[in-house]
Length: 218
Image (cartoon, rainbow, N blue to C red; front, side, top):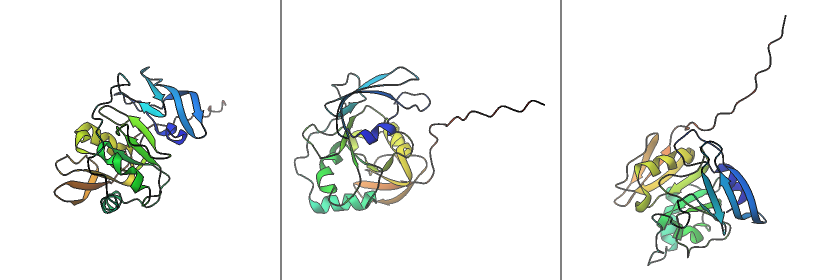
């Protein structure tokens, strides 16, 4: 997992949004190989092993992990996906969930942005892409993604709502045609297989607390 992603990670627990405390045990340049993560609010613990961040319990059992598609993504298919995601260049990551992760290698030719592969098949390896394994919602902070594509195996209302929260304003979400549209998103296009929508408002996230200057004593 890329070190830059660490600041975007949040505890997936159902409490106020919280950064994670990280203890890095092994790193190679900008890549975290082994690390321990903990939530200061609820005490939940997570781990990065072999460069993959696990937010599942137990870590070895990631739900909905897909097989590599029998037919690989062609350049035309990936070009269509790139157009739906609407990102040509970004400092924020583009997330590919489930079977969409198989497009990551070719997508890098069309989109100049970091990639985040979520619940991807073990056989999929893309240079410099971060990988995380999650359960039913994304452990990401507000406005931490440029765009995201979610496959049918993950398109539950809770997962899509967490994806919407993680998008920057104007960021796009691609999902199956029969998936529910999260609140705060505007549908842009739809066909028999997919819809694409964009965020229209900023979700609430971490609240920055500032110490108030003491009042002067007369």
